[in-house]
Amino acid sequence: MSQHAAPAKPAGRPEANRAEDRVVIFDTTLRDGEQSPGCSMNLEEKLKIAAQLEEMGVDIIEAGFPIASNGDFEAVREVAKLVKTSQVAGLARATRKDIDRAWEALQHAVRPRIHTFLSTSPLHMKYKLQLPPEDVYQAVIDSVTHARNLCEDVEWSAEDGTRTEPDFLCRCIEAAIKAGARTINVPDTVGYTVPEEMYAFFRMLIERVPNSDKAIFSAHNHNDLGLGVANSLAAVRAGVRQVECTINGIGERAGNAAMEEIVMALRVRNDVMPYWTGIDATKITKASRLLSTVTGFSVQPNKAIVGANAFAHESGIHQDGMLKNAQTYEIMTPESVGLNRSNLVMGKHSGRHAFKTKLQELGYTLSDNQLGDAFVRFKELADAKKEIFDEDLIALVDDAVLRVNDHVRFQSMQVVAGTRGPQTCDLALEIDGKVQEANASGNGPVDAAFNAIRKLFPHEATLQLYQVHAVTGGTDAQAEVTVRLAENGKTVNGQGADHDTLVASVRAYVNALNKLLVKRLKTAPETMQRAG
Ligand code: KIV
Ligand code: ZN
Image 1 (cartoon, rainbow, N blue to C red):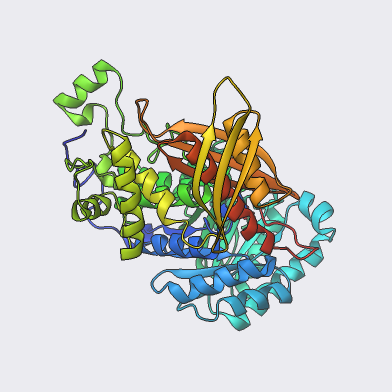
Image 2 (image 1 turned 45 degrees about the vertical axis):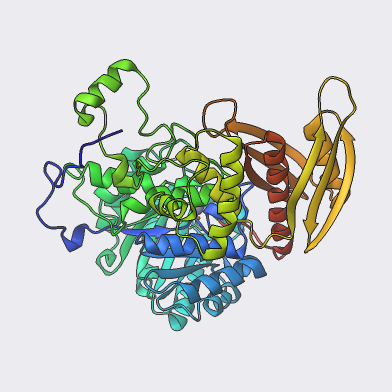
């Protein structure tokens, strides 16, 4: 582990952060991020994420797309009530109905923002909107004017902006600013642009739009070519002062630009990019973990900043270098992103107080009830497993804490496995507060367990993915299981952790079922199209 402190002032960093170099962080984890295939968050989960985003200093939280469903509306409304220091944004298409609904959801926000968008590229105007450019131009003016009559802070986005004809885009932006938009967002909706183009594109817009000085320009980059973060940094260098991003880079298709990567790139390479954000980087790890748990999307081990291997050194040469001077192979410290490894070793003799302290070090602040539940699970684990690593505690807490309001809850199971079949499972689940039991057989113990779930809670969803990974090394390692279910075109990921792989599997399946129940409630209006 690294012992060196991050350089207090990286080479070339200006003495003071200049106001004009401040980059506003607009987080869309709860909106674009939630549009990731397989992702779904219930209200309680969204509120947890929103609180975490606010705590880490996010400037604007895009909490949802209120017209999309009652669930989205409620999420925006509740986030707006909860959040006090961050601004809260709600998305709306360019119609009065959408904008009114967004405004209704934002009523309780201390600092609300209506974010309205319309496609401007030839392809989108012709095929998606089926509108001539002049109608689109008028709709930009009408929608921004209407939004501005309701809310002081309006952002306008040109969907598929980077594939829009420059003259037309400049006209639309000029009109949007004149109609009162304070922020102009030009998304790379399909993640097609490369960094050099992105830089030239924003320079062109800022220079050509006559009233560009009256608005903040914003970049919203998708990651289809893996360039979302690079494009965001290029946009900032070109004069953009808001970036739209998500934790862990989740989002439509290949996702959005990852917030943690943008923030740390600006910090670590402040010598060549002298821009700054208001994000407390030491909260990054906690936010990343919370999101993984809530969504069931684990982060790939080699993911920059938040992957399990991001600060791991395997080769002897690297380890030797690290011991002599951590800066030989580390450009930032684990601590700078909130990855604290302490000497507090946990085992079966650890008490509640030590457990609580350890969790606080790992970034968790639990209520007394949550702590109680997690402590029971910890004791069970400590009886079964000799060494308890930080990863074990993280998996355990994430699994225990975020399941509190589930309709279906795991109780107990007994499995018969091995070569002499049939493999069977006795399973008990608590469904809406009532414990129910069933026995089922199957093609292997996992199949038997899943069949027992289907007996107790009949449903049509099909299993799309079943994945197991060990949280740590050793045969007594906890298993973390991901289960993906699909029903009527909707997919959800569930996660479960336990030192028994079969128990973890059932927990993961049950978690996916609970998410499906949440998704079922989110019925989009027939004409609804997803935003990019
Ligand atoms: O990618 C996109 O174009 C979007 C807009 C709706 C902002 O998400
Ligand atoms: Zn998007």
